[in-house]
Length: 253
Ligand SMILES: Nc1ncnc2c1ncn2[C@@H]1O[C@H](COP(=O)(O)OP(=O)(O)OP(=O)(O)O)[C@@H](O)[C@H]1O
Ligand SMILES: [Mg+2]
Image 1: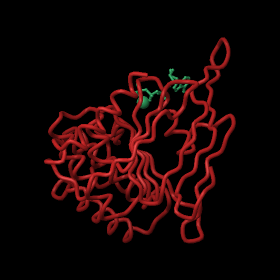
Image 2 (image 1 turned 90 degrees about the vertical axis):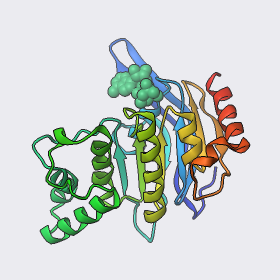
Image 3 (image 1 turned 30 degrees about the vertical axis):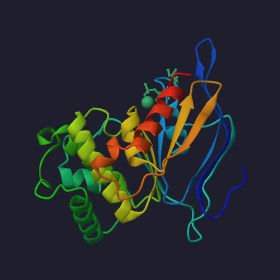
Image 4 (image 1 turned 135 degrees about the vertical axis):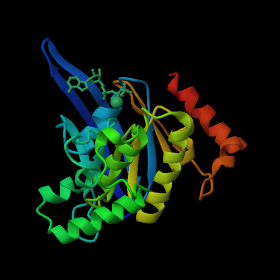
């Protein structure tokens, strides 16, 4: 696989193993794919197939054994990456605004710039009026939006999302999906998002990657050619249903 100037991530033959008491647990092998700049890709696969491991490896939190991960430069610099975990992991002793500000404080950003960026993120994620709320006062969906805002505040070029809506009810999930599409459209990031929901993947993504357990790697890379902007009625058209059926078939392998 050759990288092109349009790529924002190229992964080749990635292999990841964990050291266990009685030997190595091999989790990922033969993982190859690339993402175009501004792509919205979803990653699905059975539980335990290594989706979280893949995201953490791409985000630099887990070392890999062999293969390569390449982030082509954007405007002559290395792209910034952000990772949102399944659980919001907010700091309970910090207000909503202080949680969003944390990465900027750690980077010694001047106060004025922090306030301006936090305000922008609060607006983007629709959290106005809750800036001084404490994490325990927020709903699950709001806490998740704070986690997304905290990641976006560093202006990542590539955003990795690990089941960000996993703990939400169906309708909140759908609303959050639409919100995420709006943010992606406005900010033009490259997004790779893990989800267990086939319909969520088809609704959001340009492409859906199916990860099968070791040693298979990515067993399907399905383009989703539905028009944008996407709205609710798309969920019932035949192309949508067909894509969902194809993914369903490949998940059974
Ligand atoms: N830090 C770790 N140390 C040892 N083994 C690990 C570690 N993290 C994950 N694993 C193992 O790697 C395999 C893949 O785990 P991973 O969490 O990546 O799966 P997943 O596809 O995200 O599953 P789920 O859909 O349930 O979230 C599992 O067998 C898991 O036990
Ligand atoms: Mg996982």
